[in-house]
Every structure is written in structure tokens, then in C-alpha cells.
Image (cartoon, rainbow, N blue to C red; front, side):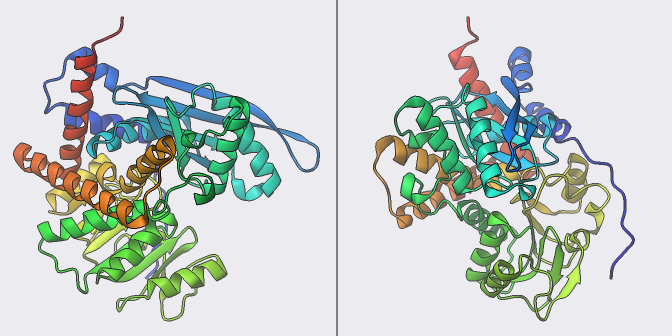
Length: 422
């Protein structure tokens, strides 16, 4: 089953983000100046900072924080720690956050941050030192009213706690609303950890209704078994679907009869990977995307579905749990083949939606129970899906362009209403 590996040229996510914007903006009557403004980031901060390592040496790390737009409210976006972080990647992710928040109607603009580092090579103490120093450097931009970070690739609730504590120490008082995705004990929200995966589940079930695919027994393939992919997998299984393929960074597994995702989670927690799970065939991450299924959930990193592999994808629905997993060229191929794509700025917006709930709760110091969180999330995700579908049908475009049209129109109108300062 294994094929010879194909060497692919890495796509630039910033080029993809701007091309997606241009495609949708062509359907809107936007003044040239406003269009050009929305095509650029608002501000970009690059920081080079020292970290004292356990052996007493000092290493210099590079990090970024980018604000794409703040017309609708404070900028919102995650922080990732990864050796392949680039400024163009962070720019793209910040722009996608603007459209994501606008798509589901949140009062936020888009931001993103990142540090060029492999956190697996650091001790816990070194990771804390790096996090706190990076937080200090970007505190020039960060505030509950201006820019609210959250977890992303290789960051988690503990890292958000360190950022919140660092910011609070500088302010002289506790400021829980400066980050979201925190532990419950210091102002986090119930339901946050599985919110992105739950949003994927809600939008996938809506798409299955549109495509007239019965949920019971529908085959699901999930690329990525992190927080998003694992939650989407077991929530779709709990809804009646059958998860037949799953992968992590080490590779994938496939069983046409399905897995018990909850048992697989326990196995992966114990072994550190899904590989070797009993009764499963091993497949590469590349092959996983091309498995026979009704729903494919790419929940890893950007640029996974390209013009090269799009013709071989067998899924009828692609639910983008990751940011930017599909290139524009692949979009065209899949659309022509009749594949229904739930775009990332809609499909994975559950995370930022519950982050918004957390921020509101922190500002009010009044907290909701998990049932209320999940009900509010369901209302927003289902309403947003139907609104995007309505635009898609009206404009006769695909779902991604429909979502972008909805988002760009909202931000452009707000820009015109506010006017251009001074």
C-alpha cells in the first residue's frame, strides 16, 4: 500500500491567504483603499530575546506577534511554538483569524503569534523561561482590551497560565481576561478544551444534512490526533458515525470496520502515538488523506491538500479542523468534483467562540456551566453554517468563498462606518 514519497514544494500560507481574500473580494463592491487595507496586516512585532538554559548558557530565540485587523474589536489569536514558524505563516494565520471571527459574528479582529522553537527539546523550566520572556516582549501589544492570546500548536493551558501570570505581575494585579484557554482554577472556561472539535462536529453534521448522508455508519477519517482531531473524532463517533482512519505526527492507522476512539485515546496517551493500535493497518499521513470515506477531517497543519493529491481524495465532505489545510488549486479541483468543503474559518471556529465566552466570563467574573457553554456554541456554529450556505447559494460559489464574502463584507462595512483616521 505504501508508495514512493513525493517531494512537494512547501506552499506559502500568506500567498494562499491573500489569494483566498482576492477571490472573495471580487464579489463585493469594496472601495480600492479599503480592499488594500484589508489585504495587509495592521502591525507586526518581531522579537529576539535571550533565555537562560539549564546549563547556564544563553540562547537567543525569535518570536512574532501580528495583528491583522482590529476594526470589530480587540485582536484575538493563538500562540504557537514550532521550529518551522515563519513571519509569513503568522501573517496568514492572523488574517484567517479576522475572517474566522467575522464569519461567526464575534466582536474580535485577528491576531497570531509564534516562537521559532521545538519545545520538545526544552526542559519544563526552560519552556517556562521562554514563555515568560516572550510574553514580556509582546506585552507591548497584549491586553484584555487590545490583544488576547490563546493556545495553538504546541502550547496549552499551562503555558497560557504562565503568560497570564507574567502579564499580571507587570500590571500589579491579576488580569485573567488577558488570555483564554487557561486552567479552570484561574478563570478558564468549562468546555474550552474540546470546543474546536465540537464545532467541527456541529458543522459536519449540518453538511451531512445538506449532502443527504446518514450519520449512522458514515465513515470518518481524521488527520491529526491532537486536541482538535481527537475531540472531533470521538464526538462524531458518539453521534453515530464510524471513525475508520486516524493519524498523528508519526503516521496513520486504518480499519475499514472502525475504531473505538475512546479506547484509542487511552492507547495513544499510554504509548505516545496511535501507531501499533491492535487490529489496524498502518498507513502514511499522505495515504490517510486518500482513504475511502464520507467525511475527511484534516486537523493537523496547513497545506496538506494540494493540486497533487486532490484528484485522489475520496471523501464527499472535507471538514477543515486545521487552519489552511487546502490550497486554492486543490479547492478548484475538489469543487469541480462535487466535494463539499466546510472551510476552516467556519469549521474550526468553535475554539475562538468558546474563547470569547471565556473572555466575557473573566471580564464579568460570572461563570456559566458546561451545558450553557455547549448550547451557546451550537447556536452560533449552526446559525453561521446556515448563513454561509445561504451566501454560497445566492452567489453560486463554493463554501469557502461564501464564508469569506460574509466575513469580508462585515469587516469592510464596519471600516466604512468608522471611517479612515484621521
